[in-house]
Image (cartoon, rainbow, N blue to C red; front, side, top):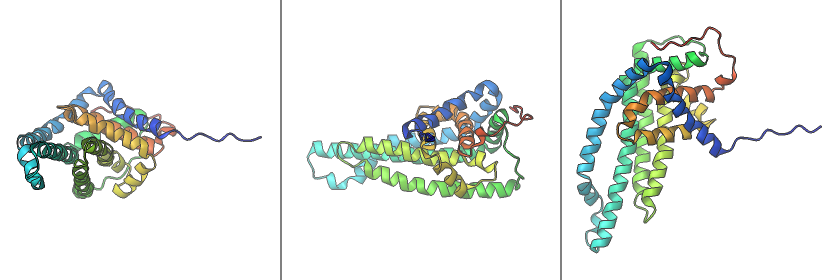
Length: 270
């Protein structure tokens, strides 16, 4: 008798499953509201700086756009205005990409202790993974900085690509925005996965490899988080939920949800 082959889930379905991890992360407010509220504190502190940077950029965007388009100075008024508008939008999209990813990296470093507790709480209520021997504060700190830099470097490269895409006539802004959300979302989820993967003794190279194995889910989660972060104050409110969602994505990528739940696992919101 022929054995029916299992159908692989579609990419679109996996994308939305990944996006759902963010909304499942928001549900952690129910089981650990005080811990999630503490997770907003470092997000708010770093958010003030991020908002100041973006406000400064927006206030000077016309000058920046003019600086980037000297070739259009001799064009007609309509063509020159359209080119400068496209350049301004491209700069905004590229800058948002850099600010969102830099904001995430910095916030995770500032609020490391809080976010580790959020991740541990998510694991506790879903079946904790085997405990790893801590390396010590300074070793973890140095590794965190090194990995953060290694994630931010491709972010700058992607921002340059988004800037270039923004100059494509007619559809440039839409293409650049889509690339920013999808590719920027991928880099965002690599960074958000730092804490839950590190808790399992898995670091950057292996983390990327594991996430590639469930790429559609990872991009779905990253894109959803990226878009929520663009809402005014959205990053502050969503940061604890994003970390919780990243922990759920980590469990999914490593197949932990298919394993028996530890009978001794209990919620640990504090």
